Amino acid sequence: MSASLNKVILAGNLVRDLELRKTPNGTSVVDMRLAIDDSYRNARTNETIERTCFVDVVVWGRQAENCEKYLRKGSPVLVEGRLQTDSWETKEGEKRSKLLVTADRVQFLSGGGGGGGRGERGGQPEHDRRAETGAEPTGGGRSDDAEPWSDDDNPPADSPF
Image (cartoon, rainbow, N blue to C red; front, side, top):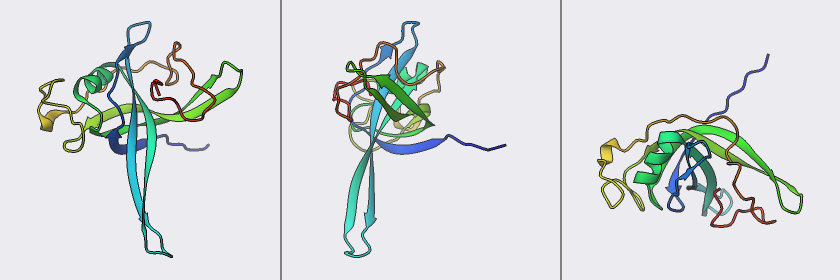
């Protein structure tokens, strides 16, 4: 018997404003892209190297609605979830796949870039800005009507991922 664990915890900032969509059965879904900064010191040159990792996250149900309502580009968030593989075929028949995170919990963090909370998009206090976990449909992170992107391995800016 083998043991396995699929758990991801990420803290980063939203790369763009969120857009809430609905599945054909009415379930809310939002796709977010996180920028996660990292740095390390090169042992040979003693130079600090900074890099940014971009991670795609899909959020379902009421939690997706709360994210769209309170978060903006630059908002800091903590995401707990699991890795999933998203696979599709291009118009040219090429098979593509990528990893994404399906969120089980999204916690809104205070401070940082675009923030949400008390602005034009809502009045929830800073200390109580955690999204509630909503129901999640079974299956992968893409909706059936999502368009695959071009031959480039990175999705275009208007991609749902």
